[in-house]
Picture 1: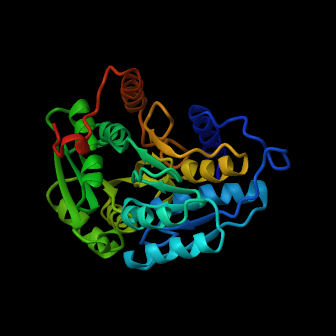
Picture 2: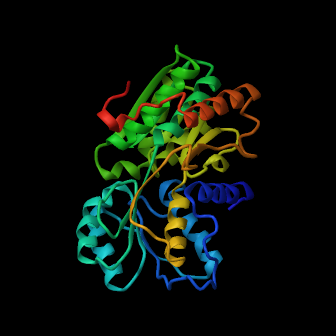
Length: 338
């Protein structure tokens, strides 16, 4: 984790009220046996799952406490993995991704003395902590940058599985595009309608190339491992790409315009750390720009691509969203993009 990333963790913890937790050796500590059940797509997807892994790694380095992990190859394994961890006494257990909601609802009712955290879904049970994000706010910001960087006035979006959550990314992105350039056009594709859509880099590359052929010169991928193909296609064609969830700027310097950071690393780290400090609480946390849960990435890998005008514009939009002067419509509030 680089210095800037570590600083973001501290800032995010402050926003959530977790700075000042007891450190290793404090009397308030619990004995914790943390575990993670990842989403499909692999732990090292360079995006969503890997962000969670980074938060777990930070906890392990600070505490020397092992984190047990399971990488499912399909959704039918979620329930079994969660139940097995609970039966083995793992606590807390993180379920990564909205698609684990049904399985967790069942297992958490069976294991009422086990603490669970689910990321990207709300499971309203007394032993479940639900962490969701305002992806539309972060996507608005990268939409601003995409529109300002585009020379053709055509920008692209490649989503993973066609679900309301990914439509939320797309809708926020479109609003940011129109904020910066009302005349810009968005060309969007979803990879598929099944979980396989998260892990098909070849299809992602194919969709991106199709968009480039139609004049797109900046593409945003919100598609898990499928997005790796989108980013590679952008590099191959000399176009700009925008990463998602983790900071993916380092993957293709000069190609990566920015990344929409979603602080799943913070969610994982906080779950384990608060359990250790005996401050873990159930309920729902909704993390947007104000809470430090989403943001855009600026670092040594993309700083030469972001002009002073672009930075000023996107930071002004960010401040206005936090202040409530700009309200980014949430697709999931009414299943429409206004």
